[in-house]
Amino acid sequence: MLRIRNRCSPSRCSGYGPVALTSQPVAEENGDTPPPPMVRKRMEVRVTTVSDGILTGTVTALTDSSLTVAKVGNYGLEENEIPFDEVMRVESEQGSEGATVVAGVLAFMGITVAILFGLILYECHDGCFGT
Image (cartoon, rainbow, N blue to C red):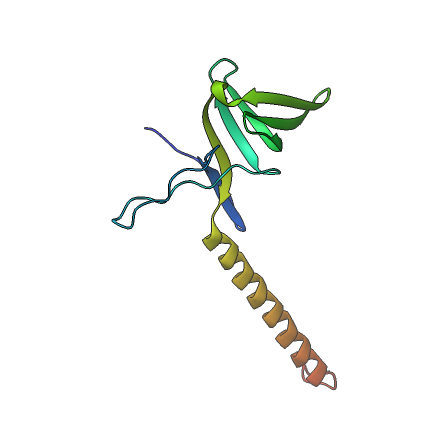
């Protein structure tokens, strides 16, 4: 049996999705899928290269011909400048918007219950509980 797992928590489910290194033509209105988002600084990415395999980290620099991915390792900050010629695929962490909305609604409900409980206790301070 094959299992596919994404990192999930009540506030966020995330996985990796494709991103583009350079601008691409806009999708036609005849039902084509829209182009992936562009790579930008401070984006968490996973880069598959021709020679080094898979590198993960944060984009710290982006030029016309390369991108730099940095990651904190055992020996400090490791930066890898990757020429576009070496890049096979770039993916970025993409979270689920729905999970964030659900977490917000649950937090609001919890706060509302706490406020109502506080009001009940405040109104009943003179013996609502038989004291």
